[in-house]
Amino acid sequence: MRAIRGATTVPENTVEAMREAVIELLDELEKRNQLHPTDIISVTFSVTKDLNATFPAAIARSRPYWDSVPMLDVQEMQVDGSLKRCIRFLVHAYLPTSTPIYHAYLRQAAELRPDWNVPQLL
Image (cartoon, rainbow, N blue to C red; front, side, top):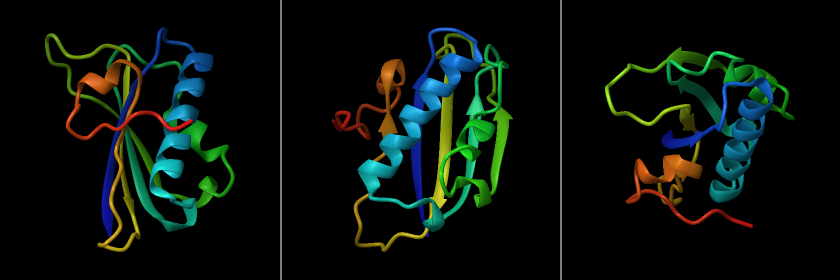
């Protein structure tokens, strides 16, 4: 079992903005790690306090094969000066230990972990 992290930001607290960001983030997760949803054990999404338009897990469940992945949405701890309108995930998946892990930090969230981030794939 392996763990993969990722995060992104949204320009506004709307269903449309959150859907676009979550889909982009999950696309990157799957592409970067050659991961199929059937290999995923579970996903925990966290959102900052300023995001409440929808649940990231509800967006993920609309994707092919994601409807059977156990997911949880939680509100992130509020810390002064932290990144606003941020969606994060922690994915646990079955991947060989020899497989490199590529974490996905997009948009303004790229500044959170520059040591883990790789350029967005085209």
